[in-house]
Amino acid sequence: MSEQRHALILHLASGGEPLIFSLSERSAKSLTSRLPVLMASGGVDTPELADGTTAAVNFGHVASAHLDTLPAHVKVYGTPSKRSHGFGATTE
Image (cartoon, rainbow, N blue to C red; front, side):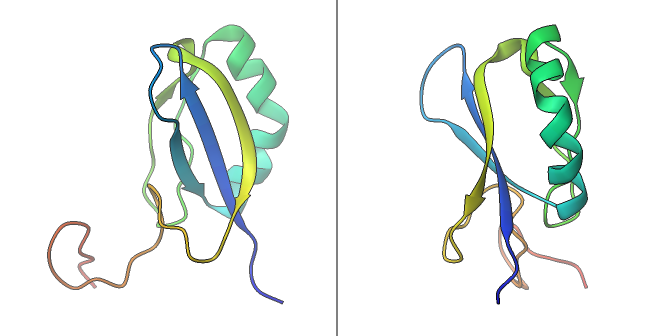
């Protein structure tokens, strides 16, 4: 069975396309219980993404947010990359 890929989907109050972040397993577990509190308070959080980076999210600007599962072929913010050059290159 393949590893489950977690996503945080944010719909901004200003409109436009949703922002989608690939979350680490630990961050997805943590946000499951805290997401309603962050939305209600308009708090700021820095979830860890699947590629080891973080993203600062000001929930005061988010109209709705939910957690979901990403299909295997989808690439979004925080998706681990094996690229060795160009934008999003890793320095291993």
